[in-house]
Image 1 (tube, rainbow, N blue to C red):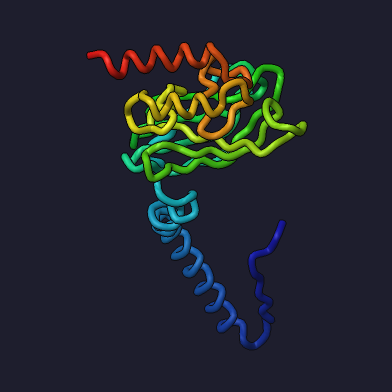
Image 2 (image 1 turned 180 degrees about the horizontal axis):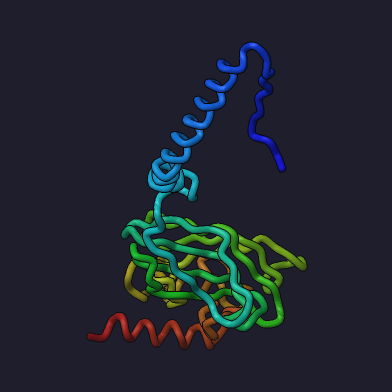
Length: 222
C-alpha cells in the first residue's frame, strides 16, 4: 500500500509531547474527512466542466447512407447555414463521388449533390461560397481530365442544381446557349454545359442541348 505520509516519534522523556502530536494529527484527519464532501462538490460543479471538453454541444447532425461517407471541409454561408464537402460511397454513380451538402443555420439539410462518374474515384476537400451566391468546390478526379488523377474544380449556382443557368443569373437564355455552343462536342470545362445526365457523361452534345432547351422554356414561359 502506498503511504501518503508518515512520521516517526521517539518515545522518551518527550512522550507527553509526542502523544499531543498524535492527538493533533487525528484531529487533522477528522477535519479532512469532514471537508471531503465539500471538496468533491467543488470539483464536480466548477472544475469538472472546465476539463470536460469546453462548452456544451448546441446540436449535432449526421449525413450519409449505408456506404462510406466523409466530410473534409465546412464553411458558413451568407444565409447563416453551412456548406459541407467530402466524398460519398452511398450516393452517386461512383465509389466514391464528390459529396456536397447545404444546410440551414440549424444543420438541417436543404439539398445534397454528388459529382463524378461511375467506377471512378472523385473527392472534394474544399468548398467556398462565391460572390454570386454560388459555390466553388476543389478536389481531385479520376473520372475526367487527361491523367489518372487530375485537379477537379466545380462551380455551381446557389441552389446546387446542375441546371442550364450556366452563368447563374437566374434565367436560362442566350448567354447560356453561347456557353453550351463553346463546349459543343467537347469534354466539359468551366462553366460546364455537361448537364445530362445529371452525373455527366464527359461530353456536351444534343442531350445537353435538350436539357438546356427544357430549362429555357421553363424560365421564359409563365
